[in-house]
Image (cartoon, rainbow over the protein chains, first blue to last red):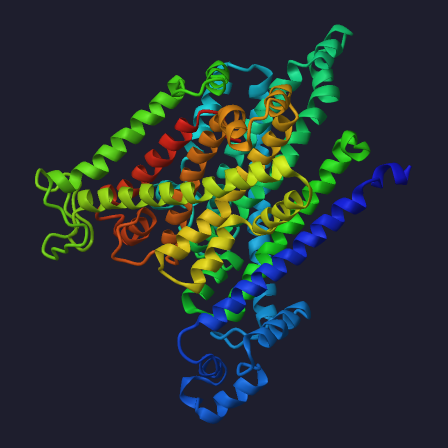
Length: 319
Length: 275
């Protein structure tokens, strides 16, 4: 029994593991290029980050240079850079001086809670709407949800966020504009992301449901005497769920990109906000850390989707 | 709409546009006309500041009002549209040409070239697109070319994947086998058999790609890691005008509306229901 369920799962996980390695390599390489292309002397910059700008002298910079092998030729320095990354030695933030790992663990929680609330909210809005619309293609609900989805899709998350802020926070005054703290602070950023996600997932669910409700097996389930509800529960839901869940993987691109922008807009103390700040402050270790964590988060979410699809759809297991 | 797309795919000539696509083309034409006519008709410099006339409401002299530095919103919007559409066109062309050619090579030749190109595409896809663009922009902040390279690097993959999958199916089709047996060369086969089948899909991808290029540039401008002020760029204008929302809501709304119309027109032009 177990072998039937887990068949093909190993290969799937292996390819995701490979992707994770690729993410680490890509982020490591790009940030390495970044350190090498920084204007000025890197050793002085790092020394200034560690000891404060007033404490930097030639000796301190030389010490840093020797410690980080900055005087080494690029190839050797590149490998030791990647080696550090492999050991999860991400260094210290040049701005705050704290270890990057410590900063990240703090921020990851905030980002995750935002992302999870957003995904759950979008699943509450999108697929149910799409399923109902898909049962009657061309109906009122189908048409109006299509228009709404098209409008939302043409608005980037930051524009949606701005409009929500103006409506709910500034004009109506129901919710706080930005920041972090109470549960109410969650509402606007999560809703911003959720609306964008739901716009797509509702259409995917609608198309999937329309396909299913036009299929021969669905017609047969009705002719054999199941009522509308029974055939929907037994034959409709699971078949329509496969594309919706599979498409979540693609939507996570939107989610990760949205997290960067939405956190910045709402001053949310998460990883996306930290990444943008690190880029503005040229804080290379933090850029590396935040980009790495976001990339790995993306891979992890996709792995979860793969596993969910694997169990939802037996055809994939035997393919 | 499906009828239109099938008709479209069987033609080499100008594609028939569905009503949805016609609306998109109309909106896009309006935007283009606006963006390129404004500098001709008005004496408008997007960077000229007039600090005595800040945040003025729309009037006859300034049809769209002025921003927080007294710059003409009309001139800035036109410049921002030119920048966005120009960048989109450039990066779509840069992405589509190698994407299509490499896709054809990979789908046709198969074997190691397929595997090599496939893993190259996977490597570019490992990170979410905006993250890759952000990292490249971090290397050269405020640089248009870093933005352009990053966006093109993300966009080419879609063309590659779609074209590869389609080519794989087409190469074994009877009509291509027959043409091959008649001794036609690869250029001829591509022009006669592959391109007419691929063109509508490439066109759809190009329209969506242009929309996502514009959104990416605006997003980076919005989080102030993209292009630098005083460039007139839609995302940058939004974040610059945000603090003046109360005094000048119309100014704040303009870049949002323009971005919405630009992206909407491209999405409509793409035709198919975008997933």
